[in-house]
Length: 347
Image (cartoon, rainbow, N blue to C red):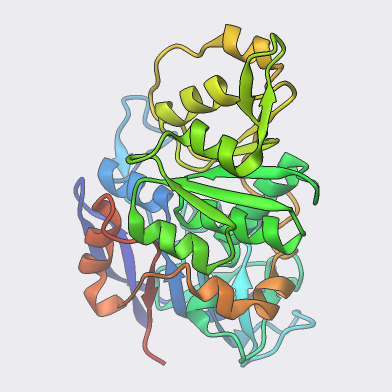
C-alpha cells in the first residue's frame, strides 16, 4: 500500500503529521500532487479545538480533521473518463465541490497532504488550470481571494465611493486589492499592526490608519470628507465599511461613525461582542450585509490572480516547508506573528 504524509489536527493546539494511504483515482477523478497550501483561520480554529465534533457523536466527541483547504498543485494521474485535464496541469481547487465533504474542513481529504484526490474532476467546477508563470504559493491564494472578492461583490462598492476596510489580514488586504482593481476611488485600511499597514499600502490602498494610535473616525473624516447621519450630526463621508477583523470594537466604531445610508459588510467571523447599538444603526440607516464564502467567485478570481500575481504575492509573509509544519502553525496560532503563512512541498 502506497502511503503519503498528511497534516491533521492532533491534541488541542497541536498538529499531527501522519502516514495515510495515498488515494487512487477512479475513472472520473484526478490525483494532484500538492505544491503549496495556505493556512486559514478555520485551520487554526480546528487546531485549537483538537478536531471537530462528529455529527454521529451526540456527546460532542471530537474527530481529527485532515487540514488544508487552500491547495495548489499539479495533476499526476488522470482517470480514463476525465476530459479537459491532463497530467502536468497546474491547478487550484474548489474545496466545496468534493462529494465526500469539504476538503480540509471535515471532508475525507485535506489539501495539506502530499497528494489530493479530486473526485468527479471537472475543469471550471472542481479545479481551474493556471500557467507556470504563477508560483504555486501565490496560486494557493485563490480560495481566500475568492472570499475577499465575494465580500467586495456584496458591498456593491462603486468607483465613485469611498471605502474603509478594517483588518489587514489576507481577507482585508485581498478586499483592498479587489476594490482598487474595480476602480473604487479611495480605499483606506485600518489595523493596529504597522507591518500589515505597510503591506496595505504596498498592494494599493490609498491610505492607512493605525487605530491603536489614531482616532479612526476623525482620520476617516480627513480622508473621506465630512457628511452626517439622519439627525444631521457630523460623520465621515465613508460610503462602505468592510469588517475583516471580527472584533467588537470595529462594529462599535462603524456604528458610531456611519453616515446616513452607509453600508457595513461583515466578512470576518465575529468574536463575542457587547450589545449592538441598534439606535445608532437606526440614526444612520446603516445597512448590515453578511458575506459568507464564495457562491460563484471561486474561479472568477483566477484570471486576475494570474494577471496580478506579483501584487497578490505581497500578501504572503511566510513560506514554510511541510517538514517544518509545526513552525508554520505556531506562526499562525500567534497573534501578530504572521500575515499569511503558506506551507510548501518539495518539487
